[in-house]
Length: 214
Image 1 (cartoon, rainbow, N blue to C red):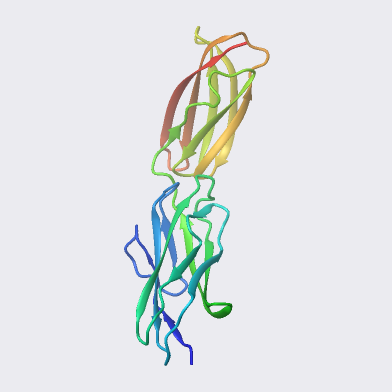
Image 2: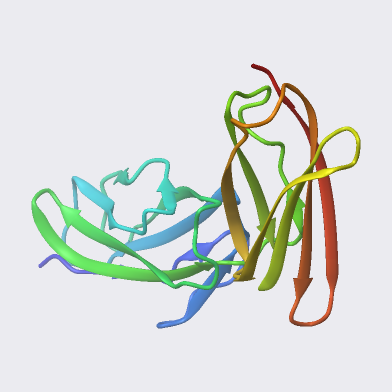
């Protein structure tokens, strides 16, 4: 009779043994996260061709090797299926994602296990370098927010004159971007500025420089 015990997994960055139904927070945009699932043969015969598969997970989770093959397990033997994964910066902060794993011996499904995770908010208010740069006639400006806030994006020429401004009300924590069109402006250096005002009355400011070439 084939029977397996799948012990609680470990998300290595957290060093916590998951509890049924618990949601685990993973750092925003992080790489090198690891889930370990301990598999024990509690049946009465050797088990061969054991594979643990990550069969479903959110689009913002990238699992490096979704299929893990285990060595044959003698009675009461234990082995570990280890999955390395990263979290995209496109992940919706605070949204729970379910990772589902299947345990199979050949084509026989032995059992499934779910682990629930969510992306933490970024730690910092960050304005990234525009891309492409130099550009013509448009470029993408991106930023990340550590909490919900109102945001104002402004662009200035070398004389300090404001040539563009746009406000974004109540943007949530996470990554955001805006495609700026500069078709009516002359070639040259421009400066971009991002101002953020959070609901907790914190104020943030970041600037960058870009080059328009026509």
